[in-house]
Image 1 (cartoon, helix red, strand yellow):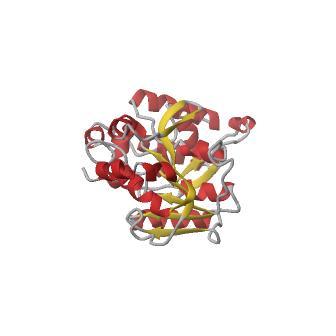
Image 2 (cartoon, rainbow, N blue to C red):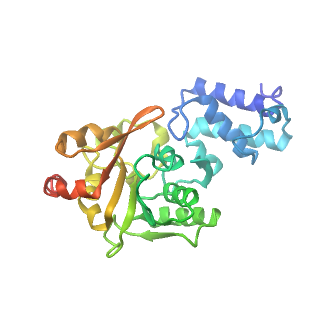
Length: 304
């Protein structure tokens, strides 16, 4: 059945058809079978995602074809995310190592990084930034790559995730400006202050996690689940961030579908919800002074 497959485009088309027929879920950097098949085939062939279309007619060797088709079947049989199968993911236009030590890079915060966090940073000077709950390190490393004057800390509680983050720091040769630190949120950051704190913490509710497709079962549970309303981690960040922000500092946090629960719980707080090209994605921006103004309400919510 696969003997007629010869070119890169042939293999992408075949993989996409097989993925759709198998009823796979697409939620790890891609939202459709064709993009996911393209990721798998090009990465398996060690080719970039922006490969010129003319190369689509290039023929695969027998060894290359066997490798690609083997990965296609593995994706269907195991439901592993493609990024884990090929060992890499793309985020903010950059390649990152990806494996089961951390979530697959996919945050909409990539769009903010690419736009320079406009308009929130247009009148702010950033010297130090923090990527809290860093996982693979993609957010913090991309911030450093796009902003050569910034010094960026990557923080996670998980040693395994930090190992992957350090490999990505080395991959992008940013060890002079980016460091990875183990800490339970801010607990190990005494005395550290930042002009910008960005976080994509766990925010999936216990109920939501139980209903997730099998693809998500390959990722670390600790990187996804955050209690009954998905806010266990986000509330701690809101509570403690003012002690680690500079006077005019800004906090940016992704809470996904837990946006509704947060707005109900802290209705008096003026969260600014970011609009992305595809619409709202559950990411808010808030200034330090706003956090201080509502500190009592935030502390009460975090104590629940």
